[in-house]
Length: 238
View 1 (cartoon, rainbow, N blue to C red):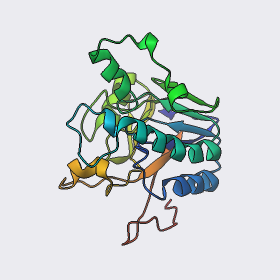
View 2: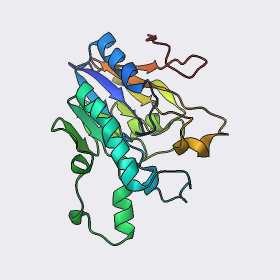
View 3: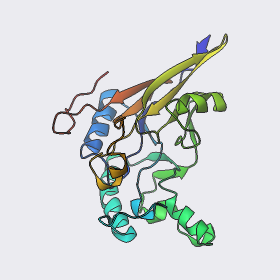
View 4: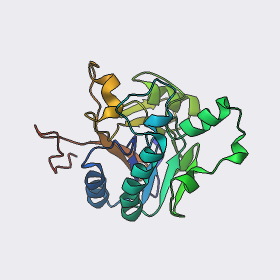
C-alpha cells in the first residue's frame, strides 16, 4: 500500500471567526509557518463570523452588520500583511450575507464578491474547494459529527482536510490493499469568551484550538496550548 507524497508544505488555518478570533491566533500561525517552513496557506473557511448576519435572534449587546464588518476588515488587514497569498474555502459563516439576500429575493449577481466586501488583496482567493498535491481542502459543513473529516475523505476518495467542527482536531488514516489516505480536522482559532460564542458557554466540549500542516503530503495537527490566563504559551508542540 502507498501514501501519496506531495511537493508542497501547506499551512492550514481554520475558523478564525474574525472579529472574534483568539488574541494570539495570528502570532501562533506565524510561528507555525516559521517552524515548518510552509509555502502554501489554505484557510478552510469561516475566516469571518458575520454574527450580525446570522439567522438566529440577535444578541442585544452585539454590533450591527456594518460595524462588525468594519472591525473584521481592520483585523483581517493584519492577516493580509502576514500571509499575502491564501487559498480560502467558501463556508457557512462567510456565506451568511448571501443567504440573507437569497431569502430576501435578491439575485447574487446584484451583490459584491467576498473579495470585494472583505477588501482582500489579489493574493487571497475564494473557492468552494481547493486541491493541493491531490489533497482536498474544504470547509466541512457538508457533514456533521466528530468523524466528519473521515466521512468526507471517504466520499471524496482522497485525503481531505476540513474545519467547521470547533470541538475536534486531529488526523485519521484509512487504507485498503492499494493505498492509504488521511483525513484531518484543523480545529479552530476562536476566542471562546467572546460574545459570538455565548451559545456554547455550557457545552460539554471546549473548542480545540490549533491549525494543521501538510508536509509533502503528510498531515499533522498542531495544537495551540494556552496558559491559565487563556493566552498562547508560545510553544509549538510536534
